[in-house]
Length: 218
Image (cartoon, rainbow, N blue to C red; front, side, top):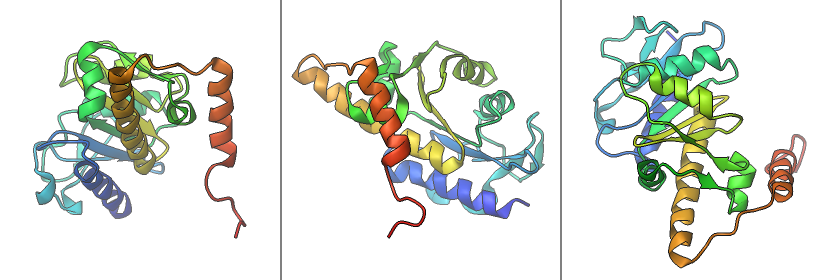
């Protein structure tokens, strides 16, 4: 069942090591089927190079396994909490990517000192409070603190990103790691200058309306 979504979630999971966002078996991507409201998620503790599309696990919003021979990700409860409380979200990514997670260790957000932050995340990538793993607590804190951003750094833990699809959530994870790296390097150079609220809004609106290809363009 859900073969198309399984393939998409599998491909996005394979993008995690390809983009340097995970190590060993850490990290996961999930996706929601908008028709059935079922969730496809990576199985727990399986090496990326050993994964196959058919290994993806299908669960309902209560966490019941609908299809799959493997145990779903240990972060499944948090993913499901996000889906239940954010009907606009159809993709969730969790990583422990090096640079963004450095800010998780010290409990600091990534401010809009770069146009890339303003365009993709707004005023900042927020920091979420510490929450224990294994249950819904992390998902609840993501929903409480992420606001209208597509990424959040969870204190002492890692990164969660959301999107209208698994690919969009993955894009947010890649960009969050990129701007975190640049911000960390900028702290070694000097004091990063934060964009004004007006500049942030201008860049965010420009990105939404002007970036990329337009329908009918040549």
